[in-house]
Amino acid sequence: SAVISQKPSRDICQRGTSLTIQCQVDSQVTMMFWYRQQPGQSLTLIATANQGSEATYESGFVIDKFPISRPNLTFSTLTVSNMSPEDSSIYLCSVGNPHNYGYTFGSGTRLTVV
Amino acid sequence: ELKVEQNPLFLSMQEGKNYTIYCNYSTTSDRLYWYRQDPGKSLESLFVLLSNGAVKQEGRLMASLDTKARLSTLHITAAVHDLSATYFCAVDMKGGSEKLVFGKGMKLTVNP
Image (cartoon, rainbow over all chains, first blue to last red; front, side, top):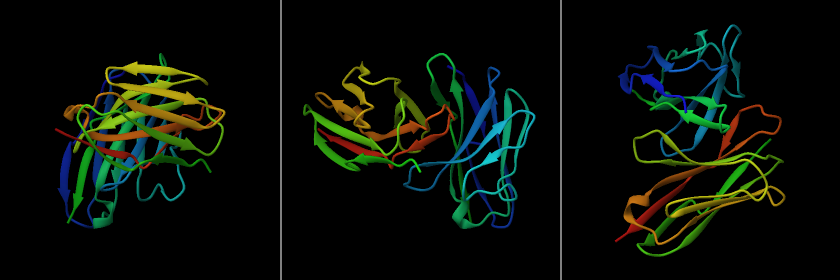
């Protein structure tokens, strides 16, 4: 399975600011996925990031709020923009494992907005 | 819209006991995943179920998939405290979109 390095692991941010989360994968992958897990809740897919094209956002998520970059096949960033306390969540990136059709998740970024 | 429902959402059980938890989903899919999450941690993959009738076992956990019934079960045998965690099932939307839809998760507490 791929190994994902996700940074930062946690942060406390002021409302109105932005935070960029990075995911580095140890192998080349076509798609990377970004999820949000609100406190005590399940995971919700934010967007799918393909290298060389615009990310595809799920209903309820927009590019202005969650811009994503995918400059190459091993790296992606998610920015949480103009943050409010409602953005306090764990954000996780994920990639597929072509060998067993499974998915590997990064260690997560625990974001608290104050 | 694909919906994934887990039952129960909370479970407190004694060590040594057995229990089965359920994951239902609303549309056709051949791929179902079980994950474990410890507090403050990321998701750990437990099982990948890829076809009707698939059964996989790891230690005290056994998962199965019935695609006709759109149902997966996760059976716990002789529970131990270390199994305390939240367990999520997730379904891959049909067509290989690679988008996972997660259930709400089941918080398991195993008491000594």
